[in-house]
Image (cartoon, rainbow, N blue to C red):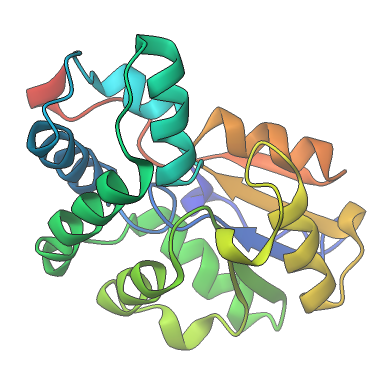
Length: 205
């Protein structure tokens, strides 16, 4: 975890953070929101924590499209995404920070390094999550899925964040909690560090 690290100013001058599961310990809340949304739409399959995490970083709509293909069903992506959003927003006030990663963010800012957030989530939800964990004022650049053609594991989100920071991709380090995010960072030609919650909460193990 980056709590024991300092920003590598020799190799990197821009630091890109994922939001959910990286800065914010919000993945359990998103999972609960998914369970509620899928139950509302009577999804006929077990949406396990492992299945949830295998899609981490992708948009809700794309995840529903992929689940439809995998399980031979026809859930409406827009309706499920809206149900997920409503369920998550009802619980977001309880989200907390991932302390080591937020400490690393604050150290980057204190050293005058460029920082940004690149998230596959919806802009209003990402903004509220960052406010809730107390870091919104530290992050001048927030890039979300609606701003790019392709989400993770494509590199688009990270490349756009790098452009807005004015930092070459090779000088950027991405902090991510998902393998899809790490792959996206590598495809962008950036350094990548896997952080955050790597195991499911006890109740889902």
